[in-house]
Image (cartoon, rainbow over all chains, first blue to last red; front, side, top):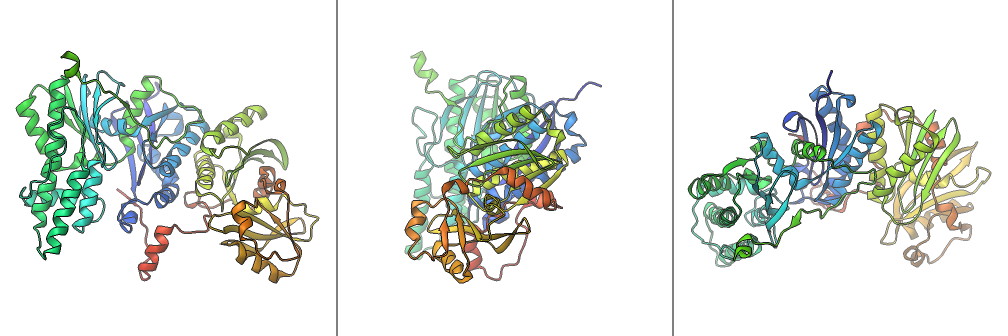
Length: 349
Length: 241
């Protein structure tokens, strides 16, 4: 019997321990996700040492459940894939060490995966990929525009210069009394209010694809504090709507500009903040109006957060391209795609 | 019984392959603390030298802590995943007891292995040999160097201190009880051969999933939170979604 193309994938870069079995890089046989959100909510954000301790409590349970649910054994696997960065080093190390041991014990190839490539490949469960392609990856730790001329070639053309979009949500969430992760609640509140505060749109008109959210965050916090000092109570729905409008404006405008400069077949939206309804709606609308020829692929809501299924999908592509890690694979907390500084516009001029 | 023994609790990293009480191969590195990079290549190299396959193993023995949080997590993750994936036995042994086993069983003195835990604190235990068995006199604990010395003074017996006396710890030493002797550095390097022998005698863990390092300290964030929420009920903070 021909061996199935099965990847056992590991993800532990932040506060989710996840193990999945993926067939042909696109079919989820199992995707076990153990989340630590309840734990870190006690502290208002992820505490790295606490996260590492939870990962080691969960790891073998997740492995066994993933294999059981997929009804496969180690002998059925083609390879083991693992997130080795970016992320929290102590968290990453649990997944990396576990994946190495499983691969070594069963003489399986070990495939290293960049967590951000994983996020991007969550959209692969929606449809086939076509190249060239542009991806807007937005999460709690990252905000970047990635250009892919072809499969397995990642190039950052724009990224945040300070806070990630998701980080900004959490920080303003704290001011509004919304616990981490604040994105979902702010998104819901935003739908009930309107943009009355007109917060700044940082770098919106600058001739690059980079983002900045710290100015917006400060403007937001100052507005709330000043009102508090005057004994004024501002409408939380309008505050949320104004904040979200500013974030979405900047993300959408920079993405549309990048699409004008880089003709692509598909636009991918992925990462934790890709679950934001305001952002999803806005990209759908803008794309239809400005770049109707480009297909929009949004990561399924269930796969926007961290999970091993997306690592398995990206890992399968890496596996086919011959990416292999040695037994000395280490966590790389600051791992990043290569940054391109070439603005195609400027090159033509 | 074929045993793989692992210790990455502190600066030294040590691996041994032991079969029926005989040491077949061992490697100890005591250089840069990057156990994540070196551990599996060393294990793989030793397996090739003795021509074992991973499937040949009967038991994994691991120094379970205390020690560097990252260090003990690397060893414990390695050991528990290997035992789980190969469906073999797993035994955890105190990292301090492993160091205590460096001392010959002929000694009547109390053996006090200790690790620098920073901020003037140590992880330390008190052991002694009895009928060729290392027994615990005081449980492994996290305490200040001075508090340890005070406890030892009360025991009124000769004490052999096995550990790296770092400059930080040296500064904490004000009055050292007379019956106490700090051993040369050689006695502070763990032997995974001894670890394997200790682990061979111990019962294997029943629930591999629940096997975690012995940190001996809750995290600072949790300590503060518990202090602010003394009545919070015990609950499982991790949920499958």
